Length: 251
Image (cartoon, rainbow, N blue to C red; front, side):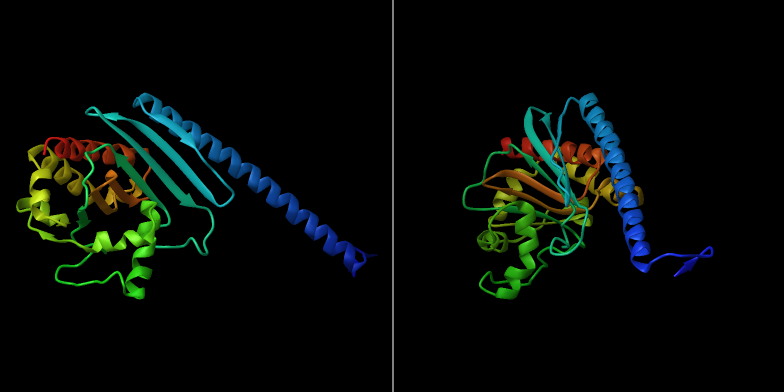
């Protein structure tokens, strides 16, 4: 190949192009690492001002931010995870936040809070955990909860509870025993849940992680799943989670 009047062997051009691409990728990776470190530092400061703990657990494929603290005397932890790459991990809830609070465990039953117009268990639909398609549909959920898919049967063994009032505009509540749901949702828990539902319905909430997937009272206390949440989204989760945990403790 002739370049500027000089003959340059083609393999030299290939080597040069590869070297240039490698150098560019190195620069971009270094810039990304620097930006991520700055973001982590900002999150750590935000957590510190709120009296929370903060840690990171990053890998080439995944970014994880871990928070922890106490609200209303309830110990809690939260983990926000997002994937850098798509592929096998690309799922409905791959980028998500999981909030866990120390509510009294429910033995042998569950109470579930789904978004009213979400992708939860729909009213009147009978689903069997023995159905391979059902297990496949619920696998992303059990993975996000961090449990074995054998627990799908527990998530399906529920029926709708009529919560009454404004809550039904935002949430659908289902329970193994609706009487248990009745005991869990006192005035404070209802008010906090309603406030969260109204906040999540605002367009601006989406960028903070306002998308509830599922809130679950079960033998592990209270677990709340949302789409990926930033520190403001985690703060909102903590407010409603703390109130729900206290409601469970007083039931």
